[in-house]
Image 1 (cartoon, protein in one colour):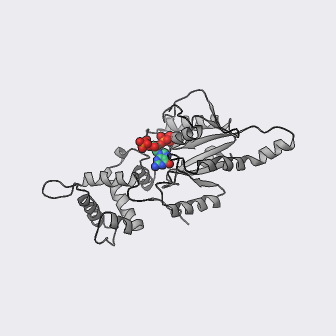
Image 2 (tube, protein in one colour; image 1 turned 135 degrees about the vertical axis):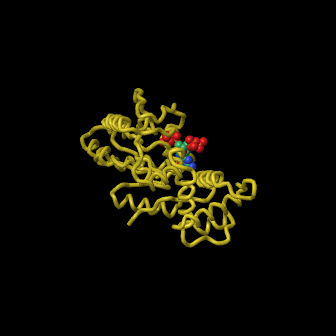
Image 3 (tube, helix red, strand yellow; image 1 turned 90 degrees about the vertical axis):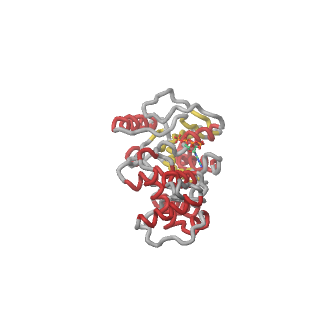
Length: 288
Ligand code: G4P
């Protein structure tokens, strides 16, 4: 569920996360592997402070594996361990517990030294709406936990989910808001389905996708849509539109008179991208 965020929502969401943080040892920050920085809350460091943190790059089934590997390196350089996962299909989820335990190992060791039997490590999943928090919680719980909705105002008694004997997970995630100021960030969020497309125009998102695809995944798009020649100057909007038209034509998005229906073509482009039909595509690369 996508929600509108207002300053009041943000303050409330922040307060709720800060309340949860008091209960937990390790934060699991969920990002979208296709757009890790764009799917990241702008105030996350300030909110989480120095809680030990594991970054999970979710929806990696849809992301370009080479680019994801670059992101893992990028986060490691920032001192943050990062693990690509695919919560929907349950891929790499078994690696989460050892990574979380690693982040808490110093505490466990010190408890053992004092002769205390260490308790299970307590974790919280945080992330923006639609990044896959509920999917991951349900997978880790091994059963369907009732959805509480992505409303920052939703409150309910905290429950712990046992993930084996060594990790306890809060059953409700910490809901963070995305960045809104940067237009390119908005495009990436809309293209991947993190924010409602009504907030931006479909054709604008499709233009952004096509331009990015031609620049970074040219051969793939050319083969998939049987485009004879790709334009060189993708800063020329007319050239980008020509590619959109070629895709629309290939997919039969034609109106009477043989003209391409650009609205329909835009929808097809966005749907095919989100469904992974264009291949594994990342829409953001680390800046170095
Ligand atoms: P949230 O709690 O963070 O808001 O996200 P939620 O788990 O509801 O997931 C949002 C959407 O992302 C869901 O799709 C979910 O199936 C999908 N999703 C979650 N993890 C992955 C993943 O690793 N890979 C892929 N490809 N998709 C993932 P939806 O559109 O709401 O429903 P549907 O597509 O399942 O019908």
